[in-house]
Image (cartoon, rainbow, N blue to C red):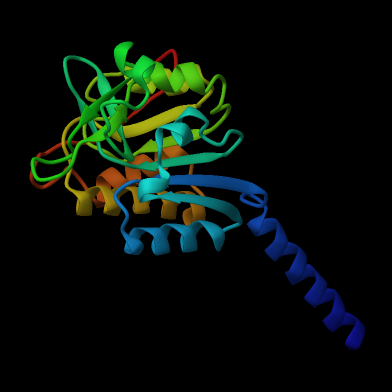
Length: 228
């Protein structure tokens, strides 16, 4: 009887390990300039409890130097940042305050620019798609990029930059989006990947069905695949 119980226990243990194996050894990096503890807690708990190691950069830690060398080799890249499309060019906000005498060459060549996430805020440095490519050569190889900010897929230049440097898929909004709505949508994507064990495209479809368009700006989630 003891022998049978041991066999059953070992079988259950093996099945449990196999059920978790899809995410063992995976890694995620979250770059968050918006600095909200609720999202940090939910996202890191969800990922870490499903086998991901998580590196988190918050607020003013997201400098131009960090964006020059975004950690490479991760499975999942989450950018909880402000972004905007101006004159057919998409810009990603850092968490670093703008100073006129900083990074003069980058400013002259328009790889970075000053920008405001809102009328009431201070100017911050924002980086261009060309900046991402210049300083992160092949840095996103086989990674999934989740860009949570506004207009991240209003046009495809930023998506192309990430995918040309190795990302297999880039996900973002085709217009402006409210903070609460983008948090809900991307937490839904993470939940689908982690606990429902869906593909990223099925996770996007699930989030679109469950969360829907932004209630204020009516923007939708979309994705970009290199060559499609």
